[in-house]
Length: 323
Image (cartoon, rainbow, N blue to C red; front, side, top):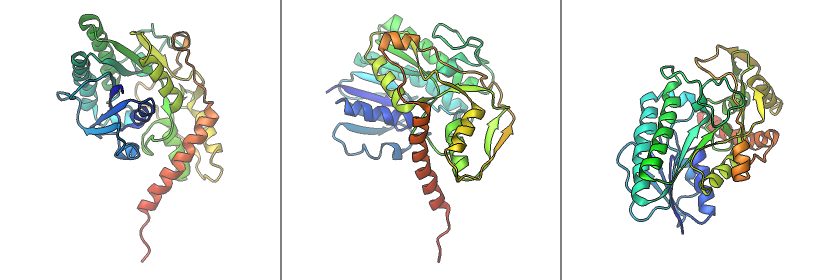
């Protein structure tokens, strides 16, 4: 039975990864300090014989007893609402956390996969973005705490690969959505859905012409698994090249909730917010035989079912009891 450590394993992506590796027959160790993750995401896994949860901050010394075959480093705030609230913690988990986990992978001779991000490209001047593009990042802007943490993590990962011979992988994740995103996550799809379900104004930044390419979570998890099991060490884009403007996405979601009384309102564009974002997945197709399978309409339908339940439970918990 392969033994796999997933840091950030109680988060949105981490919890889906825990499920996938358990289904593949791995003994899974989930490590999370729960700063943005939640025990609710992994509650259904607690008690399984091949699953273990460790409440821990990976910026400290990391040690796991016994053998370790794979280490996936997904610990980090990933939403602007989080990394703007936790700027120093975000920098620490990208630097110190990556250093500690790479050290563990080296000691255990484990294969290491770094969860990097399309944010390494910043506000790109190349479109779509290939892995060879070096990016356009403001290192001292408010988003720099996340962008530069991930860029440093990539550099450190490659240094461990070249200098210490650690078997490493780097995935650059583009915008992903699906079940277990938080209601108040702050990213576009959770924000639009929760606002529409609460009959609140749907907030679109700028004029809504900025674009994102959104990938359903099951497609991303498949890409991560294939990359880990490949023999390629340089960064690989994993995302859905189906590009959509934020205004059109807000309209799509509003149409899916016909009972909503929400209207779309416009707010100032945040500092350094990327104007365009689309992955070039040529490498993933040729190297991994991977491309997304779930159309946006179907992925949004599945995600909306989850958010209907989550928002409903939230409203129940805030409704005063009748006496």
